[in-house]
Amino acid sequence: MFYKRILVVVAGLLAFMDAKAQDPEFSQFYAAPLYLNPAFAGTAGGPRFNLNYRNQWPGINNAYEHFAFSYDQHIPTLGGGIGVLVTSDDQANGVFKNTHVGAMYSYLLKVNKEVTIKAGIHTTYANHSVNGNNLIYAYDNGGNPIYSSNPNGNRSISFVDFGAGALIFTEKVFGGVSVDHLTEPNHSIDGGNVPLARKYTGHVGMFIPVNKRKKNPASISPNVLYQQQGASQQLNLGMYYNQGPIVIGGWYRTTLVNGDALIALVGVKYEMLKVGYSYDIVTSKLRTSASGAHEVSLSVELPAPDRRVRGKSYKRINCPSF
Image 1 (cartoon, rainbow, N blue to C red):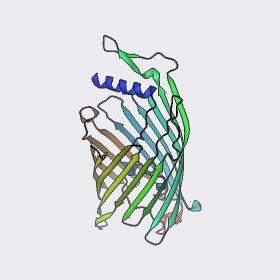
Image 2: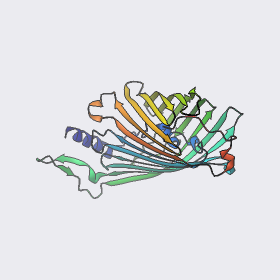
Image 3: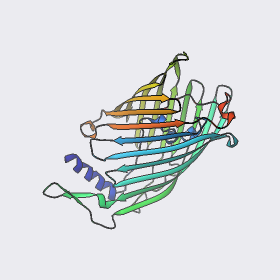
């Protein structure tokens, strides 16, 4: 009951105040490639479908859930890749809901036989809403919640958003940068002027073969990801180990002021299908109530219908899938 009351207070404050927002995140950020960087559109070559689900702070009932679905594919006649990304998050048991629908394009440039560059842009239609009728204002003597009966409790705002990104990669090294909310659109639900702060992302990694056996080849991939949005900063340090169809990984996430979480990951690849599961082990002071986060990813990569993409001339980025 105590945790629910804390949630009620936070939800109430956010509903009627213009709060500085921070974008949702995925611990398996490479499993949501278009969400990480629009330049990833088309990097798989053929049609790719990704589905992501994150349940954050399961110790607080229905505190936060985030969904993402994406499709992308390389189109030779366009000189690059196209993609569609749909995200939705549900906070405080339906009090806050955000839905984003976006499209993106990435241009492919082969610098030489070893180096490839991709540059991407995306535009998004967003809707943010608050259902004030689901806010709990008090509890009766029996401990039952008292909800608002205000018929005008529902509020929403819609806006258009833009972003851009770039990738550079070789067979063993890859890196990228992206910027979201380029125009810092106003997302105030109460009619004020609250810009959605730009989010800057930088990520870099290596692909290091451990053995090159045809059966059960093994590799490791150390990675670093840095993000900044407004005054918030985050640094992720970790490594993947891949042998045959199995992938395991570990990450440490910090705000640069305090440690945030340890992340454990396991994934399986089978032909066109990839499935991953990760769990965030909270290391901050929230660990007594937040209970970490569960995350599941599903990816399907179909063969490219165009033989120009199936051939060796098309360079795929050699980076983790989870």
